[in-house]
Image (cartoon, rainbow, N blue to C red; front, side, top):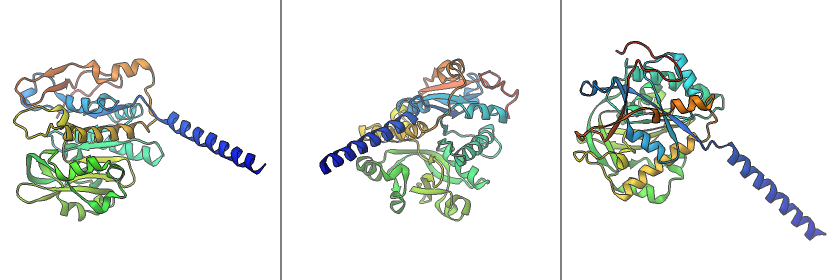
Length: 331
C-alpha cells in the first residue's frame, strides 16, 4: 500500500510539473514584433527620404525569430500609444542626431515613459538601446544630457566586465562561459561613437546608478573610461554603447569589425536574448490587416554602393502607416 501511495504521489507530481511547463510555454508569444525607431537622414542621403533605419538592425532581430516594425520619429503621443500597444519590444538604434530636441529623442521619451508605465503594471515590455540608443536611455533616465566627447570611433574592443555585478545580472548571469570568455578576451565589441557616458559621471548621478546595473566599461584611445553595457535593475531595459549587430551584418572594409565565427556567436547571443525577452510580451495587433501593413517588409530597401552601409530603409515623414497620419514638418 505504501508503495502504491508513493507511486501515486510521484505520478501526481509529474502531471502537475508537466502542466506548469505547458502553461508557461503557452504564455509565450512566438510571433514577436519589435519596433525600431527611425531618425533623420544626413544631407547626403536626403534624396532617398527624410528618415531611415539601417537594415542591419532588422536582420539582427530577424535572425532570432522576431519581425520588425518601423516606428516613425516625430509623431503625436497617440501614435506611440497605438503602436506600443501592438508590439512586443522596442530597439533604439545607433545614429548621429541630437539627443536634446530631435524627433528621435522626443519620440524616445514617449516610448520610454510608456514602457515604464507598462512594466510597473505587470505588462512585460523590453527596451534595448544600441550606441546612440544607449546614450538616449542614459539621458531619459537622468532627465538631462550627460553624454560627453570621447575618442572611440571605429574601435573594436574586448569588454572590461564588471565581474561583481555578473551574478545578479539577467543578461550576463546565465551567459554561456564560451560567450563570456570571448567578450572578455577578444575585440568583438565594435564601438563607433564620439560621445559616451563617462564612468565617473554615471556613478556620480544618483538617478543612473540607482536605475542601471553596470555590466562592463571600456577605455577610449585617450584613456577615458566609459560605460559600455548595462541593464536596468527593475525593468527589462538593456543598453550597449557598442554595436552587437555589426559583426554579422555590416561589411564596410574601412571599419574594424570582427567577422569571425566567435564574433558571430556573440551577436547571436545578444539577439537571442532580446528577442526572448520580447516573447514575454502579450501585445498583439488589432487585426491581421494592420499587422501585415505595419511590418518593415512593406518598405523598399536601398543598397548603397559607396560602402558606408550595406542596406538602408528610407522613409518619408509625410508618408502614411496603419497607425496615424504623420506630422507635416521635420526640424
